Length: 228
View 1: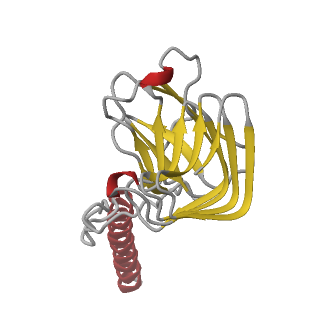
View 2: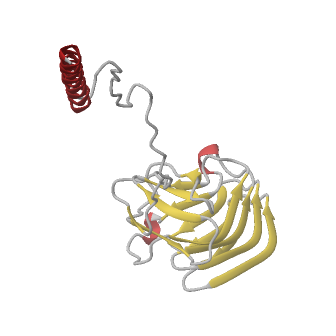
View 3: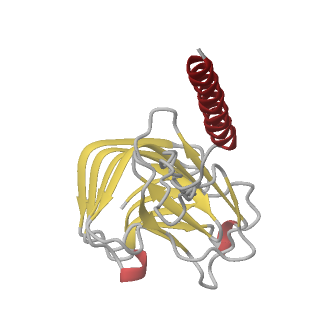
């Protein structure tokens, strides 16, 4: 096991840690460990123990470690350092992958744990993020899709850091009106324009009057002719 203790910093790069009889890596009581292109596999207790220290993940690959519930990163603060001001912290500054979906982030819940607070942080350039999500924390990818979810956090533990917000659909669906919803106006071809009807009727009356006048004139002409 590789450990960083009080106020010490350990930078691990291009390394494979396997077959440890305890954890592969431990950050203890203020110790700081960064993991850059590091693989941890087949370690007895778990891959990483963040024991009131800080672990920075730049590029981490986890195999099968410990029990199924604790195959990756365990978050804890031992009762042996209960009076210390240090709390566990996890910084995402790149990517993380695991052969197992369960136990990638595991909060200790045994009698040896005295964790009261846990801090999560994401660098500005990180691809994967660690985020608070209710009573759990999640790790998301570049599309904000959840890759891994932790177990339940104890009520006595407070998580500080960025919160997870689900993706929202920003597209505006086009409103489509169905035939049933389309208002229709009944068409009645037999309905006449009142004004047009009145004009026709007036024309007919005038025509009749004109014919009558012509008839009278004709009769007068005939009468005069006969008298002559």
